[in-house]
Amino acid sequence: MDVPLLRIEQVSKSFGGHRVLCEVSLDVHAGQVQCVIGPSGSGKSTLLRCVNLLETPDSGHVYLDGEPMGHRWKNGVLHQMSAGRLAVQRRQMGMVFQGFHLFPHRRVIENVTEGPMVVNKVDRATARRQAMELLSKVGLAEKAEAYPESLSGGQQQRVAIARSLAMRPKLMLFDEPTSALDPELVGDVLDVMRDLAGEGMTMVVVTHEMGFARDVADHVVFMDGGVVVESGPPEQIFGAPEHERTRSFLARVLS
Image 1 (tube, rainbow, N blue to C red):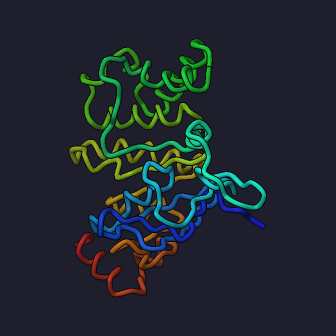
Image 2: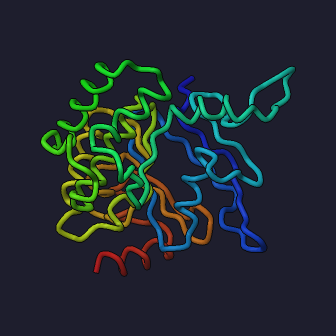
């Protein structure tokens, strides 16, 4: 039986009295690109943060490669794992946020090599060689010795992608990675993400870029009010959505 690389099972999350996610379930198979779309406040970003346990779900579970995130089985019962074990699990996921979160006092190359050297104990020469390969992949090899403040927002976001890839993740999570960028800088970041998809990287992308979702996604999920309203292949969601809420949202954002 084909076990999904990522399984989100009946995940719910509330903040105070406000329920942000309500029993959300999704499967993402290895090599798939799933785009999550929907209006602001629909729970999309919270869902991603629950996947790698930056937010702890109130109920439900997340499984990576069949293993429960943040828990381990013992005598048939799930027990919460230690922070150290959870950190090891998290290394299998890369996450790119709306903000870039680069170390401003470190050069680009140092931002990319820091994780492999400190966390994965990769030697400096190997980490630097791999970092240069990744910076070439995102079109920024010539910026290796620059500081983040000298880069455009789009360039900083591409460095952030290279930094996540340097940890050799099984899965990449993107939380509206272009929303903080000037419009003319969006295309370069989306091109990098298209290339990753073409190479078979498993990706979950929360995005307002409908063209990217339509052209690159294998599966599109439309969320509203903390629930999955509709999901399916992009030709269905964009071409023949079944739900009125999906139709009204797309009519507004595509007009």
